[in-house]
Image (cartoon, rainbow, N blue to C red):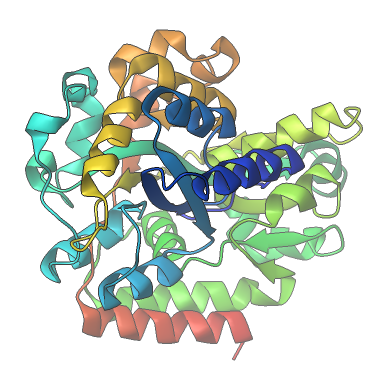
Length: 367
């Protein structure tokens, strides 16, 4: 992500409001979920309630930092929370989430072994987390605006968004970067030929130096606003999460196809990330959480979620049920060759993480 991200449409708000209203009737059993905004088809929540009688209160956040602070403090009041992969080891070490009782999850056999292998570094044996969506970090861009300013330049490399000579030509049409330090440093380290999971502070300093040279040309750091900004033609390029960039492309097409967008995973490789379901240690209704997890492990249900979000899921049995426009897009479901260029990030020790975050603050402020 993870991070996030996702639009919250008027329709989604309407359905969520109905679900919330239903929670106040008759003292029905309630499930509290804390997830990224606009990251599920609202009809899935409605259908779950119809089938089980369990009312869903669905709250949203827009950064892993907000979620982590809440989870590590405890007493969240939530039964399910959805962190990104690199946060999970810290949750485990702090005892903030429960080990899974897999006897209550009949759909685990549907999970995709090749994709689950990417989860091993942060949740060995999948003891604590059930994957929800996964994707990549790459470049979303306005094809016409970029072609006008960088004629003849192939949009297939991180050079487009990291080299000052390119960014200087794009400043007038707008450049957004993710406001996600761990994600940004991971892709930058890989681009620089370094270990994206480096523990050497000098490697991060090299990435910071590169960022600072590019900083004057970056209009904003944000992990979700790029969707609307790209779709409306307000900016011409963004570093973003695959599903967000493809949602922007779809939204632009729905608005009359006046803005022509595309998304690319750069040839140097990129991060593959996961957003995962976890159960807080003090979840008020863990039993309802397990019912929802097993519901989401059904191929036909998780396929609907992928079609809605335009993100890949880790349920192999669901792949054939995902809309072909999503399933057959290599920017959503990478080819076998593309998978070889992807990496997963590992958790950082707190001292290193503090240093990295301090460096990221320097990047954001340009100082």
